[in-house]
Amino acid sequence: EAQVTQNPRYLITVTGKKLTVTCSQNMNHEYMSWYRQDPGLGLRQIYYSMNVEVTDKGDVPEGYKVSRKEKRNFPLILESPSPNQTSLYFCASTDGTSGRNEQFFGPGTRLTVL
Amino acid sequence: QQPVQSPQAVILREGEDAVINCSSSKALYSVHWYRQKHGEAPVFLMILLKGGEQKGHDKISASFNEKKQQSSLYLTASQLSYSGTYFCGTPGTSGGSNYKLTFGKGTLLTVNP
Image 1 (cartoon, rainbow over the protein chains, first blue to last red):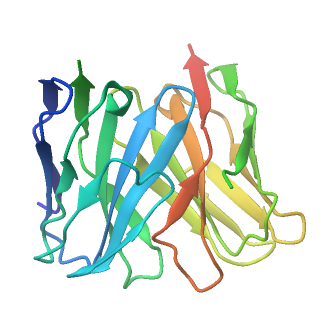
Image 2 (cartoon, rainbow over the protein chains, first blue to last red):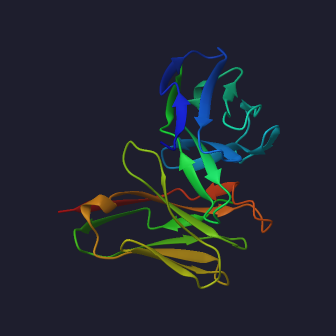
Image 3 (cartoon, helix red, strand yellow):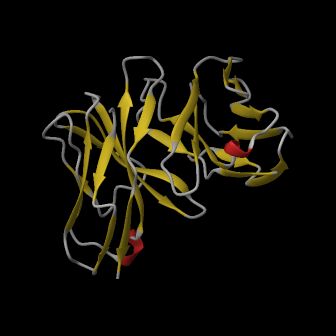
């Protein structure tokens, strides 16, 4: 089954404790993105990647890091989480070959930083 | 800049029609529409690439007016399953970075029996 998976789905942590949210897709898509979703603000792009070892900042990259060492994986790293990073996070991969540029979203990771 | 969606919320009875608008202060080269049901991930509806283009997805269609820098999503004879938050997304540049999308804040659509 074609899908994007994220782990963990829920995470409660404390300020300053480094964490990684994993994202993996099995559709061989070149393009992947991370978004955060906050009430009243919609989906905001954090980082995106156009291929292995090629990443770029989205609209709200501060406090986040990403890496793309393999095509299927695109982890999101919070080196020193703060309470303002409490949010719902979505990973997405994009089918850039069909012309639809459809983004397939993962199920989301709800992060709470205390 | 984030595209502006209107209305922010709309409540319908089953069978009624609705229009959701998406406008941008900068030139648009494409518009993407997604729907997110409560507690779920966003799901792609359609992408519009050309001025004046219209597309359909079930009884949901959309138009895109490049000159006016806006797109509208039309929901006809709404069904309970249409309930959710609708987002429009616009890419960063004409260079086709359809992967760097900026989404609007969303329109919450509620369809009641």
